[in-house]
Length: 228
Image 1 (cartoon, one colour):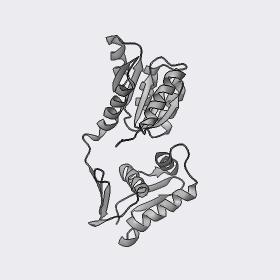
Image 2: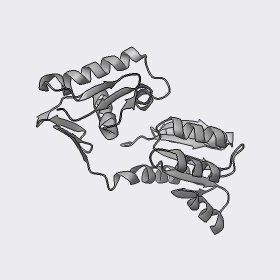
Image 3: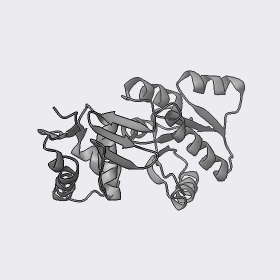
Image 4: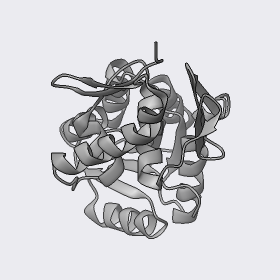
């Protein structure tokens, strides 16, 4: 498939959760799982995810409360799809009022779930330019290419992913842990591996041009800023 997303499933029904995870992982998506509301909030706020699949009836904390908490505390808008057996208009309105983006009533088709996920994950991109321009650096999301001062940068897929992550966060820093999770999921390699990749990226993005754009932020991670 062309797009693979990081998806958080918050669902206490183990059988349903297993079916959803198996189906979506077979499509290439990366799944994270929480079995109760408190864990759902924690997972949604601690890791970068593209979509949250959120059951309404959860132990420890109900889905409406979880949704509202994510909306209140997340530093960006995460698409949230409610999964529930409640199908009245009032139930749906309550879900949307708490911040849900979409609503799917159980039992549902896994194919429809996958289609809804794709629509939600791509929605924030609709008004977003394909290009990110930071000083002399231009990044084209659509073409997966980058140029500096008009010169094409020849990047491996992994180095491209790191550069895009830094560019989308710029001028804010991205933590080492966040880079590791985004690139390698729950089993990132050693910090030496990330350090090596950053070194290679600097050899391509910075070294030929004299002025560095990739900065190390002490005790945090890395930041991409316009060169002076």
